[in-house]
Image 1 (spheres, helix red, strand yellow):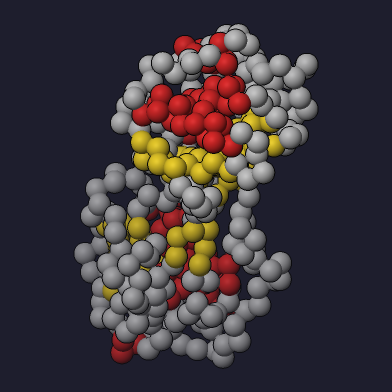
Image 2: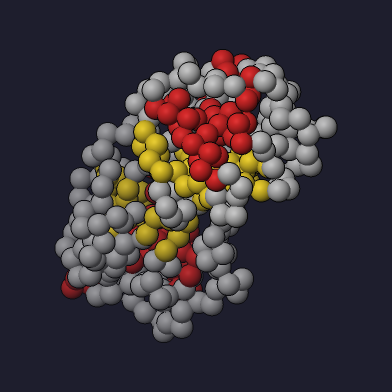
Length: 365
């Protein structure tokens, strides 16, 4: 990112949204019975945004073309650039190998892209370095960005250099993403901007992954908070008012504090599905599996890039041609699922081994 002394530049953090899958509680003859214990929700699949570069390739599929640069002289001089490494965030991570990997990249590619060769000497505790790479929890204000992954001086002339110059890199990223940020920032210290090649390194936007985090299925509470907005789509639905009341019974059950479920949950019904945390829909045919009476699908964030959701962003509940007095039970079943009780034995008692009549009773009382 451009300069801290001259100009500064920042890399933007982009995270990936993934779909956690859809599980149907029914199979067979169409009776409204939940999924057997042996059946679980499918694993998530990672779907990177189309405009996000991954695996160090350009998003448009084109081969990066090197910036046309004349033979130039390094503003750093002919001696190796001495790089110190600092950890003011006290992370206790071993940053040195990552810095070495990034400097090795530019030792191999600087002449092609910057127009001159460079050599680095990484000495973490160097007393008089040319560059200090610091790993910080928050990158200082950088080129107008307050959410930068890194920041470095854009060095195009020896007169700009005030040794030691500082390269700041945000902590919390995976090793691979940290190396990418380091390569990007070191590119700025060699005079490269966001418009220069190689685009997979110097672009101002990159997909960056965090360090490993617990998956949603491993968390006691897989949401960022307990305040939920709920949209109930009863368009062209018979007995709409009664069905909405059934949904309300399920929401109230959890707001009062369902056994084994998180406390202090709130559910606010809204009139717009955009941004709703919970969407309840009615359908004549199942979008999940044949003969399913209901199904649920969660979506969420995969910041560590392991292909599994870490926290949920929303849940969609689809009720398939249900009798009105069974609506609340099915909504309650899928709410328990989305709150972390994926196995039936983890759900509140009304959702374990419920009979046909149980599911149509006032189970919420």
